[in-house]
Length: 111
Length: 112
Image (cartoon, rainbow over all chains, first blue to last red; front, side, top):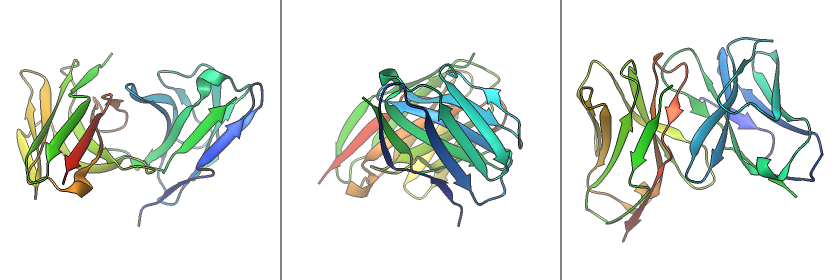
């Protein structure tokens, strides 16, 4: 069964902290994605990666960075968390075309 | 770039009735249109999809229709059940699902 897991379901951090969100997929997929989900705005793409050590900016990369050192793992990094980064973060992966498989999400609150 | 609009934002129906959610897209090069269902506390899950060379696709109680000329596609759920209550997202892709633009979502409530 296809599986995308995210390291935390809920996370509370303080303004200015460095935050790591981890995502792991077990499907040997090349492509991995990080989205941010906010009410009324749908899913917005932050960063994606087509291969190990490769990364591409999505629609809203400001304030975020990513790391893909291994094929199965894609990390989202908030260098200095701010309150406007409070959101639900979703990781997804795909084998190339068509369906994206999503993780359960991490609800991040920055206070 | 691609823009996807979705209506309505919320929808309440009685159990057993039908529900229809509509999406419009802006880029005529879009070639793949999935629908995702997101239940509370879970990530979105694909429920049905359609490619640009097809006008309609059915899977049991759910169906999707595509009108390429008008650049809109719709999700139809018949005989709704309480477990259909969720947030539904449409999306459009110009590269067969490598990248998507998602609609803002529709919260469907099926009332018993």
